[in-house]
Length: 312
Image 1 (cartoon, rainbow, N blue to C red):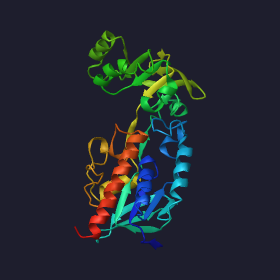
Image 2: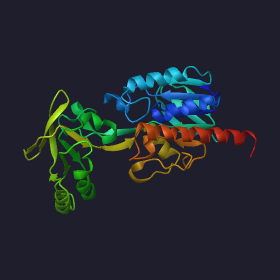
Image 3: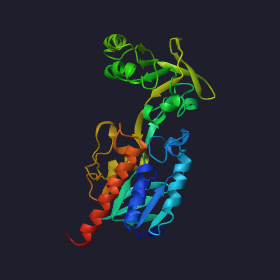
Image 4: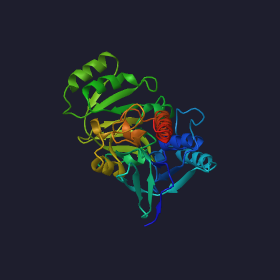
């Protein structure tokens, strides 16, 4: 096993949060190792990232390529394509980061920026073919690319059903909320939605009818067919394995849904261990929100290094 101890910070993950933090720390002349997985990123199915000024519509691959090129100009940043297997404390106020190739890095601080894993409904035929194109997780990310189509919004609560039936009119005049039959309050949600000019349909989706990923109908398990061109479907999510292990081994505090809890500086309950991006929030998963948390973490890491150097 080889080891490299010449790093102040190891950043685990190279999405918007990790890359933004790396760039900020590089400009602070901070020694950084960025380790990113060999596997395709979570947003690889998307045709483009949206809502971030200067990058609107740029493909995920191009976004990452530009970022790697920018970071390569800084001599204090090392870029590694490797899966991180573990993040552990050393007992001397430092961290040891283990890679899948057996190498390890020791650092004063670690930033977890891995993103999360979408738990897509594998039992729904056609879901994966449409995912990232006409089945979207967020109207702010791909809503404009699906404007003026017939929308269905898959929800898991009556409150969201009533709201969703009318909340997406900026993109579609024909939007229907879809929820399971057993959902408490579905009848009152339907009444409220219809009063506002929308509708709620109850049923369990079993198949998406599409042409090469272009949705045109939803089929329920009772055989009903609902013509829809776009579905807004935000699946459940879980942490990446390295984060799940860190939560267990380092006793990281998590909130509802298992998202890592951080303070205003993006620091976890373990001093020196930061987290940024989607793994900390269920509902703030845009490129801009993630980048902002990465920048916040970088500022805090830099300030912590300064204060530590002068023993304040």
